Image (cartoon, rainbow, N blue to C red; front, side, top):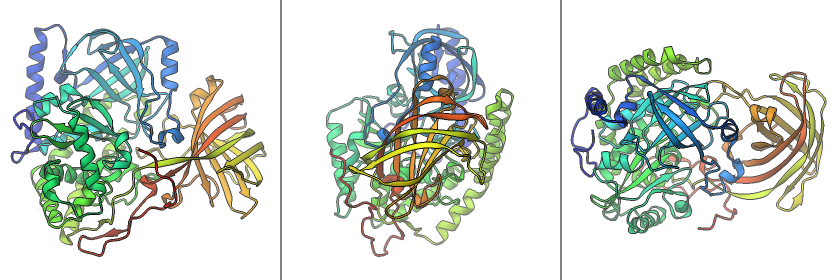
Length: 606
């Protein structure tokens, strides 16, 4: 669909229906080719007019280990990009075609992590040299845990493509592992060399993946190099980062030599229209940057769009305002651009262009109806809320034009006064001890008596505590996708009062229910809250993350049963990112001073 636009330049109006028709033609052609060949094609298994059966088998012990692997919340925000997930060898049957000796591992950053139905990568070439799928080297199977509608990635990327922008194709898969049906997954086209060759016409440039980081000097090292190209690409990326972080006015001439500004304005406007909360412009997360060899400039590719076309993370703790803004500008590039003379008007025109050429409500609503009819017969019990999620998506589609028109009527719209510092953290201390508490269901006034010992050390000093107690219950906080989790974790809250100032201190731990029942050592992750009882993120202030282990001696996870064991936790001070919000202002208004809620914190070394 994009090969005709070398260098990925937008060449005129692209209707939503036209984009779908082109994809259908490509699918028919691939099916004809597959009839005379030995394997599968990317277009055939990414065809979103059907649900493709994918069956994975691997040794039972490997599957148990794989699904139990997770991320340590403290380590996750210390700046490291190393994956905690390991590859296992297995076999897969895709749409009736058997493929042996593939690599299989868990995937996900935070919200999509799950032990019952984990997101998965299937790498055909991990263990043997084989190319069983023409145009695709791996399967990216997303569990849709954050997206109750199941449609967010499919529709979001379709809008990007209809706007003439690079975005992956998405199919649907009914995934089974070792005979256990996991449900309907989004089968997302991998953004790797075959994708780059298909979309940009050449795949020899460097491709970076951004996860909770920005293109500024302090977080450049966290950009993962997924496809290696010219070594000079890294030098040009560093030059871009230095330019964006500089206090000097943004030089559009210099910037335009590094970034295709017009294409970025269109990319940025689509992210904003879709309310792509977890994308580059809004959250400095889930995006690709490609050094396009055709002209040497950087172009962006969306990723992780399972929180789009809705109020933002289902109205959960990180959703912010319920009415999505027309200008997302938390990241450095959109923020610096928006406060550069002339750019707000160019962005407004990009916004208007997408609304006229691409945002066709009737077509979008018809697509939601079509996909609902396709998927409903295949839904397992854990995905029974999909129709309600689809209806929320319809509501967003119906309302979005009015929200954008309201913003355009009082242009320029307000935006964060400065780009926010990327997420960073520093080791703070430890929390260790033992507990025994009675499991309860839901909120109750009288917490059953508990036995607990707790030693807390912050910045080398022991914190004196009194009134220490523990409670155990089901974590009933709404999931990111707009409803309760299908397999909620066990919540352990260890609460106390500081002796020095009388303020509450609570350690909120989340334990995987499956692993708690089976394993001798269970990962324990969570947050420390201060000044409030129980779980909360007051004002999204800088928070302390917990990461460590829990060794159960009693495994009660039902009302009236006892949960007991020893916990060993590292405490990490998280700073920047979501915890760093700048005041809003309009272009032309007096600039605010850079905002950093913890200016004395030691920044990470680069």
